[in-house]
Picture 1 (cartoon, rainbow, N blue to C red):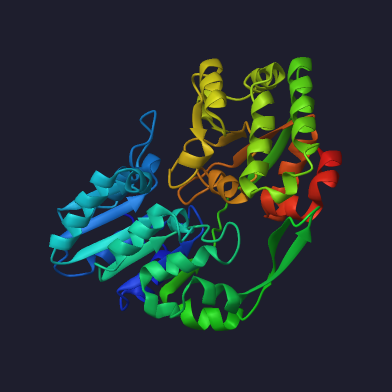
Picture 2 (picture 1 turned 90 degrees about the vertical axis):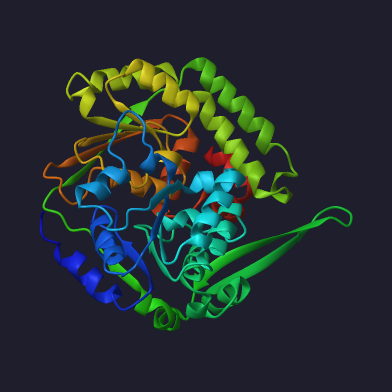
Length: 407
């Protein structure tokens, strides 16, 4: 078996004295191996629970799973290991209650949460269930390469999972201590008004590190291979362009849009993008691409079910994946080429997608292609990803009239 890498040795050394810790190591640096070492260093563990993205545990197309990765490094000493998709934990009461019973009857359980960013929303059912399980367990680890994808509030539930005694503050206190924000109330006709909150900055970061630093290990990824970025432009067909313009007008001519909840704006952009996600010229562009590069060596990330189905039908040798379900945890270092078929405003998912092949153990350069349509929404996606912000925050800043011009 290969020796531990320097950063993996450092992880093991730092966390051996702690019963709870966070491995906030960049994707691809090798979090799995030191996690196994840390779990195996604890005596008398009679149950290991590994919670992570379902598609990392049960991937499609026969791709290597996290279970394969763990077994590659010798596996856990404990014979009783439970793998649970965090999506399953949220959707299935039966699965949750069964896991609850297993943990409650174990003598010493070690709980590992892979891609802990999945429980960033403290009021989500999955997060509340994970926090309940956490209270029953003494030994626990959270693993993530991108622990913050929106703002600093993403951290609260992850650290609270490790122990409420680390921060010693609730969600509201955390927000008021480490974030600067302003609230704006806009008065409409009559007695109507609506209020929006904007995060404007962060503060007291040295104090935050003084609280959590002992429990966190951070590590960047430095490889002797390149990441090469490219772009393909495509043209919407006349029918898709007309539908796009009609939907844009329908939404943005609605003067009450700004006072509605954030989901309305997200719904608008999703529907507009869905119209042209499979416009014919996209397939023509990619067919030309595959005349130069081997189709079977490609990952293609799609946002919509329609995209996944049509792309898989057109390019059956390629590995077609979903941003939401499969951009995390999978080790796909044997696929050096990546196509981002649909743009995504979540820069965290986008970043995670690039690390499926750019990771420790890969010896080949990695190549990425964005596909960009000839409409304003595509430019807006790029702008948000490069600024590491999100569409809702952007809409709050620019307003309905300015957005109409950009789209």
